[in-house]
Length: 312
Image (cartoon, rainbow, N blue to C red):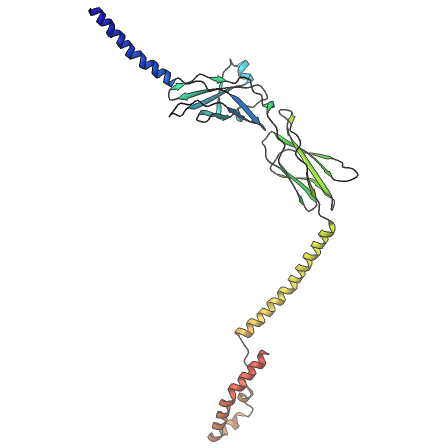
């Protein structure tokens, strides 16, 4: 009886101990990230995978890679990716990790706290020579009679094969030029007056020995000589008028300011002294007073008339 009771207690203890542990292990067991693939465009390589979801938790990922050298000469070691250790998004830019035109393998694992999944690897090895090359974005312009082209900067591996020609009903001789890098203006040709020139280009990546399709043809017309001569003549005439008119305008304005702010007042004839000082001194008082009265009466009218004459 005692043995049966002891056995029953042991079974209950084992069940109470193991079942929570098994349930806990099942709850935190992370699956390996599925669907690994590399998407590559213009030598930019992005590794993607399907996310591992745990309700209410954030799962992180770590990425490692293996090149041909590591696979065959260093006991198949794996190297952590430069930018993708404990990231929370299901993608990784592995462009900096791929430095040679050989087959690369990648693997990804999920982590949650102290728990980690198994590694998931690519189904097929990736080689950067399979990247998709697009036609370059270019802008053509003219500087006087100079044909100018500019390409976007696509990275250190890219060159641009440019084809250009002058449109002509008789013949169109194509010319070629290699532009070593993007992001700067490049002179292609000195254009003939009134002629139309066309340009197309393709990207070239020598490290993988591949090139893209040609871009759409873009054309531009050089300025006609007659219109250029007209512009020069009009500009010269305007400049000459400016040189002549500016001093005249300044002189006229100075005259207006002078007569407005500092007018010249002319003494009226009635106030001018025509006799000698001795005669004025000998003048009797009764003779001076009428003169003074006449001067006071006449002065405003004469002064006003003199101002009018000066203004005119």
